[in-house]
View: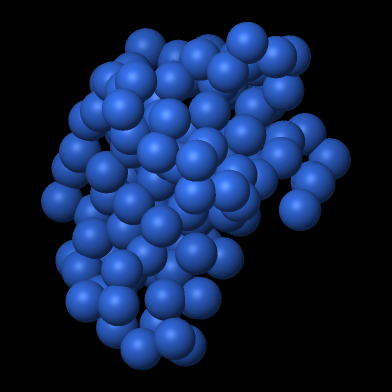
Length: 114
C-alpha cells in the first residue's frame, strides 16, 4: 500500500533484509529495526505476533502504528526501511502511548528530525 509520504513493506524478503542488516532499539511497547534502502522513499513494515492477541487486537495495533508513523513522517528522513514490531505491552495502550513509544525509538536511532 502506498500512502502519501511513505510505502509499506510487504514481502518477506524485504522484512528479512531489514532484520539481517539492522540497527535495532526497543522499549517496553515496541521494537524498531532500521536499514537503509538506497531509494528516496521511506518504507514501513509492521509486525504483530499472534502472541499479542487475536486478529482484532493485532489489526488495531497495526493501524495505530501506521497512523503514528504517518503523522510523524515529515520528521523522518527518506531512504530508510523501518520495521516496527509490537510487543504484548502495547495491547492495552491507546494512540498517544503508541506515538510516544515510536518517537522515543526514532530519537534513539537519531533519525527524528525536529
